[in-house]
Length: 279
Length: 159
Image (cartoon, rainbow over all chains, first blue to last red; front, top):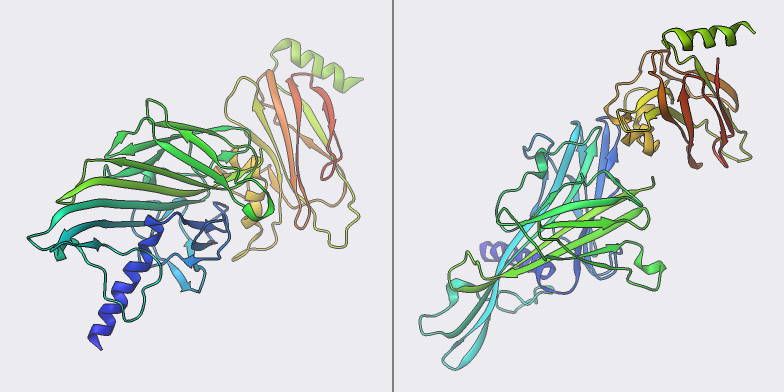
């Protein structure tokens, strides 16, 4: 029985990984972001897919999803369920202020050559195939390995919900990896108005960072409608929202400041879903 | 005759009072399912400054879970401009929703002379949402505007 449980655990880790690795987009879509009073509930869909926000590929696993209350302490994720295409869960917004729902993932991917055979480290993504061996980890690299190429991957996916007046405690950066440090509060976005968001890498402003902003509702239009933007010298991104709606924001950065031994590259991703309201 | 004379004198001597009223029309809607709209009115100084809510009409009967306050955020512009940090019910400001018709609301007497914008926002369950703005001059306001769907004629006048 025990090996089965372990295999299951490994399987969950595997499914969580492709969101970081493949072109598919991982997203969380809240039922709303602005709430009145402290009796409200937000319900959130979480999935991995190409078209936003349509769940037709893989669910986003809830194992790593955490809820942060306005005071910065951890809150409760309720009624979580994972279906074939999406996960869904609720957050009871019983305290006033801004809440954060976040998932963080990290993995090491790469390859090495041992005895003339190339082997991969980390999963390739996709569903775990029954009967296949678990993917190799950094610990599995033998001493005689050559051509070791390892990339450290990390990603954050966050959404912000506000009951009553917005607060900023949950927006405090940790100083590690790629982070979102908004100047405009993420729950105060209005169509036609410019919003400013600062991005940080290891706590320092990230200039020249590439950020993609894509509106939801892809199925009902021809164009992807993506805005490809870059942060300024101060690490600040300015986004002017063409219309109200839900937007998916994705920022990626690559550098060599690795934290894992033997890794030569660090790839960081930040994802959030933002709701823009009519003026 | 008399009220206008009084206003004039008041304005000349110490300008203590805005002495203004706003008349708002809630139009009749030809719909199968009708609910009275939530309405918020607030004034904002033109040069920037804190918005001030002068009237708020919402569902006040339901309490507990799913209370009428749950939908206050649907008055989106008002919510952002101060509604979210306001405590309801608010004395002299908030009240129950109103049936279609014409209503007169007195603006606060202690509005300092200057240029303001009066905002009137209405949001209706299973209906639409509309925001109408009017220039407000204190003292001696005089402006009219009209909404297209959720609000009818709106008139600002000196009392």
